[in-house]
Length: 113
Length: 115
Image (cartoon, rainbow over the protein chains, first blue to last red):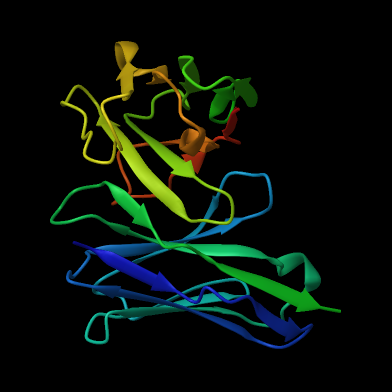
């Protein structure tokens, strides 16, 4: 079955630094991958989608890479701010061409001022 | 409304009671998802509706859980004979046509507490 791994430990960084979060997956080659942000007590909010034929995608201070050989996606936030503190989740389609998404457990990012 | 609406936002019930959770997706979205999130955990997939196709129920944890989507719009998740381990936040999401082409829009969730 599909398995998604994200760093379970919180990531603490200093304001202005680049945060890098990791999403690893096994047993499958997804056609795309998504990243979401979740604040406490709120539903997740979509950030970026990257397809298997895209190596990298950017949106403002966010950058996502997708290495289908390593079965890994990296999520970068440059010039991080305390407002970036949240849990970040990656999501993959579950098997074949389905649109059903499964989520990783998320990584809590804390940006210290 | 402009977003996904879920009700109730909070529900406290006694063990053994049935509960119904409602989700009103964004108008025009054909895909609807239910997930469960226990405290400090990730999102656990429960069920997925896509248009008029038969729903994918593969994530429902037991036969006490069921969901329906009427008229391709509003969805209700029903939990019968609730157990304490059912306590969690139940999140609903909708999408224009599924995750492949874009994002899932989530509601704020229904927090269920089973005493």
